[in-house]
Length: 622
Image (cartoon, rainbow, N blue to C red; front, side):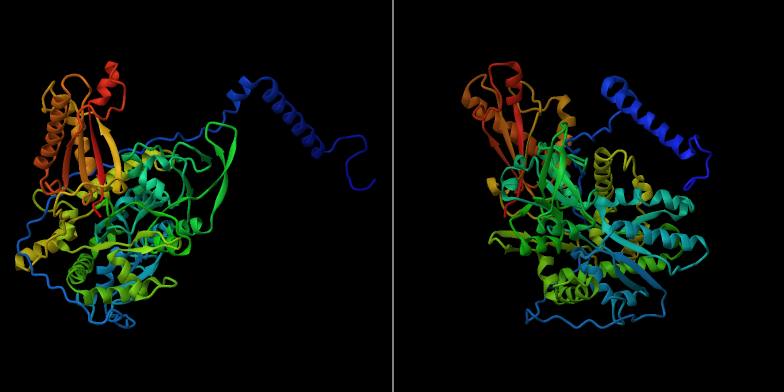
């Protein structure tokens, strides 16, 4: 007998296991084939995540600041357009403890770049002036940024006063902060509540470079985007742009990446914003199960959410996509947000405030001086190490440009702004009459993530845990006490009323705003609706607003036209009365169409009710 130690005629344990498995499989497939109802109860199918229109991205009012002293702004221009300084190596103030920051390659950080002077604080930099030895470490992956903060907090917990593990700070998109902090603060709380991560300040805003890119047909008619497959880093800032746009235009989103919904936006999750661009450039395709069916379909990426340099890569290396919508239209959506570990920051307040003061002074310099912007661009080139770029690249795309893509089509690329102290006071609602825009952005887009991914992100930390404005307040109080001039915050300016052209429409939505019969007076039950409209328009601080009034066909046609004009005007006056800064006359135009443009039959009460509407169009004037 070979190959076995068991007595002849008896089954081995392995044979018994094989027989049991075979009998189990026979029972399983018999139940599945002949008792399908029982099979469904015992083995319920995996539920596909429902496609749903994203929640509306509503942000509250932000009013212009009235700083104690307004400093004059002098703009200088370098004579030679190729003149960029050579950046020297740091550290220039190694006598101060090293402070490390993870960051993306993102032009909203130009003031921060100028303030630091190089990869690490240089000798004559604003950082060294404020006794901060800051070192930049580029990190494009949010999970690695989170890991860096956890490593730092863990070393802090071990008793290290200024840990060498991990990073002290990360700089991310403010509208993605809720999802970011939900991914880290529960872990940090295990170390103790004092170890949570909090936002403390902002170096700038994205003002165009972060964008949702798609075929020109999507921009001309948003409904054409249904069935699109978009590459992007999910649950973060650029994904949020697409979510707001979809909500504004009533388009559903499919959060289930393993399926394809021909009626909604669909997604390919990418490692980062550069990977998103490369997926489109490479012509990435995949086979998807068609939602609600047993069929499959091969679909290729035809849209991208990304930022510079991702948008430039898309344009130069393949082309064919335009900026469907960006942070140029959604002005208040995306503040740069600097996040650190609360315990270390509380113990090192002078360092934290010094870093922020340097950033704010760097923002003032870049705002007022072309020479300072060139220095910041040269620093960006050294810090970001982005292949194929030079200082002129970062300088050019900071301002935002229109260029030909590879197909010859003109596309918008880049566009950012830096923040000073007054911009931070405005962002955090620290001046009389201004709202906390960060808190609203954080909460609104946090709710969208929870709505779309309730199992993955069931909740997020409250803004009271996510934000500490005490550092910005302390800086402002010192400035006021010393009567140091504060450059005012930037606000959008509308020079004249200009009608939005069809090709510049960002969103178009009908609102059922009820008026008293035959009058242009709101009924009490419509106040919640018009409040929602007000909040929805605030985020788009530079977009023009058109209000179109419509009626049914009951009564005289000319009287209906006048009434629809008066009702549209009533909405404009209500918006302006609530916030004249955000809704000046030049921003909002009104139109009365009367009964000329019905969307339903006037033969039924339901159809007439639908036709009595106010339609709001959001668009650009450029």
